[in-house]
Length: 504
Image (cartoon, rainbow, N blue to C red; front, side, top):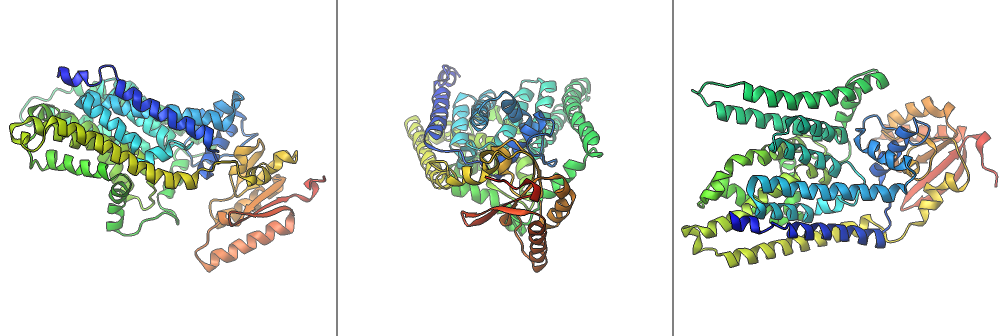
């Protein structure tokens, strides 16, 4: 036990990992331009909307309010918006790595903790998304806070953190389901079949956790009722995005294989060590050390959340790499347990002929190096495509069009990125072509300009093509075209109301 604690008593390995995280972020700040993407723009614009009481920015009611509340405070303070948001995201990244370490340390020891934290950060879809102003990593952070507080038996605070995770990303609220399952598992294990059941030790923490979660959730539901007239209206509409025209995976086998294939392709060592965990703990082909056996009871704190999140994202048709972020910390801990099993095996008489401590150390270094190289290669390819070295010309020419021409007013847009770059008031009409036609008719009398991007309305039928043509005809008939250029293969158009036409 003393040796295990000595491995990271000074936390030097964790500190080195965090310095590596910060160094990469600084290199990104220095050598790359943060070109905002669609979802980032929406969250940035929603932050403006909240703190301007709807006079600036844009609002999407199906999005959770947690991240916009945080981002908008940066805008309200007058800080450089995107740069300060990047720093906020770095805080969530560092916090997620530390919490993964702390959870694994408390459950399985310091060696497993460091390996878990390293696995998490070096995994490509965590690394890549750590540079995005999105809800994935902040919601992961609050999920991990919730689990850590749960382990520490701070059940009220854990319930509040679970609710915070839900407010940042609705599927993250499944941690509420996972931790309640852990409550039930622990209760049944202690109660047994023939023992007298003692409810007091179960009901108090169970009630504290659930009441804290439901109290915060009720505040959101009341706000929904006051704003939209329905308690669950935005949640129901958000749930419809579990199945969209783009990003759906058809077929049971393809759905089940999607995330395992993603992990095996982008971080093969994570997949290998997860399989090793299954072999060691689920199908014990190799002997397990007494030290490891003592910690088996702690597996429920990582296995149950992993299975709940993995099952949900496997069941829903719509799939993306970034969805794996919610179960990734738990997968990283499980995989590190599989790797650490090699070390435990080496200490047993049956395993000494197979493995020794020196070989374990070399394997650890080799695994982390290979995982890092695979991740670095994957991320370089994706990163090089997704992040530009210099600010593209179209940022000022197109997205800052209104700012540069001194235009101020209310704008109907099919592209939310404008709302992140300037401080006008925006309404959106980009959900789909049917909604777009209804929203155009609803808002056109109250707006001063229209931003139209044909690519915002992908069509897969003749009926859709005809509806899109009718929408284009209506926009052209009632407005004046003042901007028409093609950027990256997409035609971008800006129309002004006739009495708002700019005169240079």
